[in-house]
Image (tube, rainbow, N blue to C red):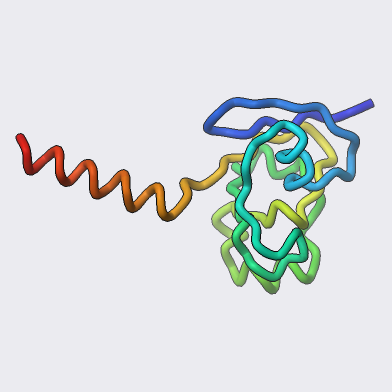
Length: 114
């Protein structure tokens, strides 16, 4: 029997076997999570936000993930390549930094035009 993982903000949900990493689940449902290291917890690009109630659907942080996050886990962040799904969970993908910068620039231009 599988567990469900939902990716926000796009709302895509997939059923996976317990023990599947968030990164593997995202690839199966075609939700892009940026990574440069191929899932080895060395690039830190695959950070995702897991709200407190959903965090129970993931395995506890391992030592490697705890060291890499350096306290960000207190804000609900996990590494998609390390966190494994063990129950139903909702994961929020942070906005890509480049897209965020472009969005902010466009907003500033719109304000200037007003």
